Length: 448
View 1 (spheres, rainbow, N blue to C red):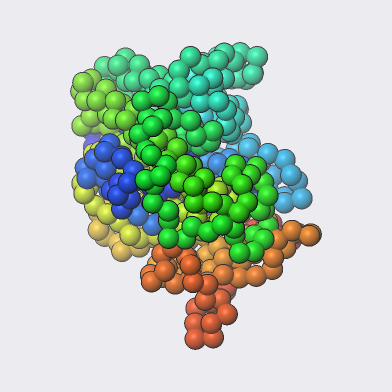
View 2: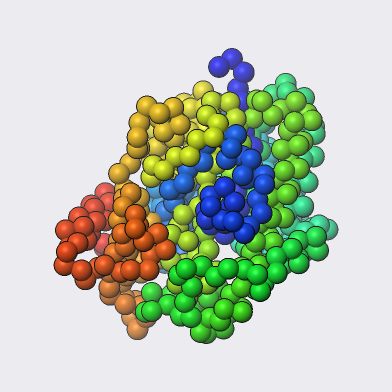
């Protein structure tokens, strides 16, 4: 490749994989994401790796930025330390930094839920960056490029647009300035569809709550204490969950997603009118999913499919069109994949695996298992057919128990087979695999 491709990296907050039309949801309207799936490759069994903090977005984004697994991406993984764990390990070369060091203009807008130092190393152009986890979508505190690299909160101003427009329009202004003389890495991190789920006026009433179908695994309450049942996210609705209130949450969630999809469509139009579309790799993904009533839960602090499986879509030069890939992938696999697509060396510190063999059809899988963690109370291992979740008691909270699901026949994870003697070998196999992975990666619960 003589000309290096541009990269448009889009990441949402709380967008589960199943809430996309092309992924099989007949209710949500996502024509832009559906188009990206049709024109690119979508990874249908993609999961994040979780993390050791309630704010799951912090560690999952750390994995994406570093290409390192969850216990190596951040500074300080001692589970006795209840700090924010938002500082990226400075020993890594960060994804955007790597492209910047290889001649790319690196631009960022939107949410950065990690430390300012790693951000300053990564980007040389900035507009409307939000350092934090969540805020009022109509009044987001943002700032622009800080040559000192400190990004002190005293520099903040209140954005004057809805968050999705605030970030998307900043990205479009950047695209409109490009003349093709230098490749760019554009990182746009939306805060949608994270709560407060308040779609802007043009999408506020697009989905009628009473028309929202309830998921097959809707429940009034989770059947046991999973170790973190009463955190903020779970208190956004009453106990037990009601069908009426859950439908309202789903309607608002879909409104936020459709609004974001519309803005991404405007960004793709900006690529086209500036003659950049053919030379730009587009990535769409999310930091984690969301329950929104499934299994009696609302948040993402669990290891069910609705919370760990997230969209991963690529389109552009070197990416085959219309390809649905069911191999097991982790979101941080995008790091080495982008390096290879751009002709850059992959840093030695990267643990992730390239997606190119899957897209090129030279391999049927890049890993036999997926793993994910939540705090020190939940651990998960799964393969193409089976999934095991281990729960660990934390003082007076939580339960010491195991769940086992046959995903191939039970995608809603309704039928727990952990005590079924006829599949005891599957449970034992996955327990052994989980223990092996924990030992290999240095899971701190092993020494707690």
